[in-house]
Image (tube, rainbow, N blue to C red; front, side, top):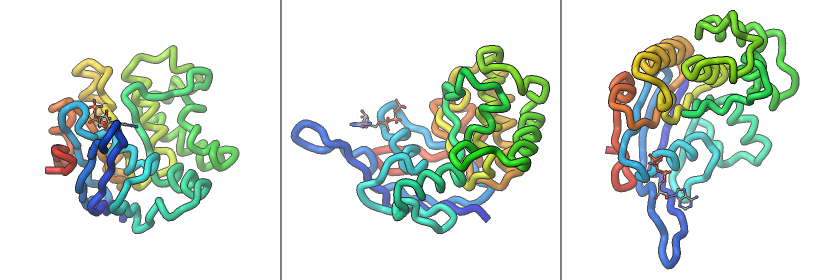
Length: 222
Ligand SMILES: Nc1ncnc2c1ncn2[C@@H]1O[C@H](COP(=O)(O)OP(=O)(O)OP(=O)(O)O)[C@@H](O)[C@H]1O
């Protein structure tokens, strides 16, 4: 089963004269199927925490174990491979590549390891079916609505069957009805894949849809 264990994470940024202590003591433990919303005011450190959990930035101290592996012990190329396999990212502005089709965008995570395999292609097709876009595989992102683009981003995040899905305001640009259906879809696919989902959001509705909610305050999860 997927596991995430975070112990006593701390992270500061250098500022003129002193340090800005953004994370002071963050710990959590989650397992496959769990979903967690992290909320808190602008600037409290949510994105910083997500960057560290996504292995895109290093903590100053503390540890992150994803399926019992410490990503920060890996060298750069091992870490890129680990990230590509174990972590699916979903962003507010979806980060789809405009010149690639819907299908190609979903397959982007496989490009790090070469050409997509037949298995990757069939999984991408299944995911696009699951997000209701089977008939749009050849379209460009510019030909889709905001909600549809976010669905492509969800399919892409799930392609490699990651341990951890990290979502930063995944419904931030969507109207309420579209946001609700994207949220339901994300939770459905996350639960059935057995991944752990962590969502950072200002939306009470999105936060309430997760199994649990924590507030990031004074550098700690409360
Ligand atoms: N690379 C950096 N160098 C210096 N300070 C930084 C850096 N990245 C973030 N910060 C500061 O760290 C604090 C936390 O930023 P972060 O982006 O993690 O907050 P947030 O909770 O995600 O905010 P928002 O909800 O507005 O996105 C802010 O005061 C920010 O200015």
